[in-house]
Image (cartoon, rainbow, N blue to C red; front, side, top):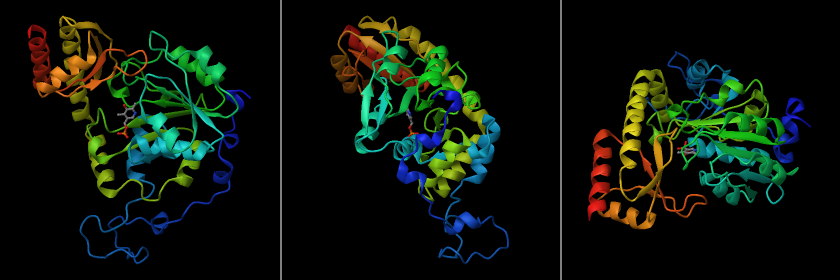
Length: 352
Ligand SMILES: *Cc1c(COP(=O)(O)O)cnc(C)c1O
């Protein structure tokens, strides 16, 4: 089988294939402030803004996202954070105790945690020294039960985007679904893989409003794929998985894209400044190039420097236990004021 003759039905778990989803009252009619009388869902009729169940299909939100991303609304699934989207992928495609996923450490920890929760094998294939996917090794590790391959690009915590010809190679040769996690795409100079969905029926792209959009607190993750893949995920999601407050707030923010863009520009400017100054700190051994809103830095002794920063009230992420990340710290790019505090603290530590 090759990606051109890819059939999603071969990957879906047997019990999910035959499943018919729960049909809620709000599947049939959505309250839209019209004069319709809604006596179908056992809600409290007194209006307070959230007395009605939310739209289970998030139609308004998807309509705007579809236009922005150049896809059909039927190619979008929304979830309670990317974490829910990831979990749905496991539950739709991975048979516990039989199937496996492939992850590329050092990377986002959630793929491994979800594999554990769902009792799915996790085959780990280290990134190369340049933090790129090791294509030959990945394809060698994959077997008939390898359902999902997770590519995080830009990758957390290394901050680089993967070389697109390597990603293409994987899309064309891996037999399961290739899930590209683009949580940091809005900070990247690369374009999104969403533009390639028509080429690759085995491609799933995940984004989030938690990073560039500044809405980590409302929990909204987005998933883009073929209509066939999305309809499988829709079958198993909880009917009201994205609450009304989240749908409203997300819509407002997406429509106010100018504010988002201005903040992103600010963060990128700050990132470049921080990148230069970090290189001048005497215990810093290497500052890795960043295509995201954080910077990975190799220092002389990560745990010692982490604790010194903590004493000065600055919390960063110590990544020293991650493979290929010995003695590294990960700094999120903050506001100008926050970054100045970080730099001052680093300078004080140096001379102390
Ligand atoms: C932060 C992050 C997410 C976001 O997860 P949400 O559940 O949407 O907040 C997803 N993937 C990666 C790699 C991340 O770093």
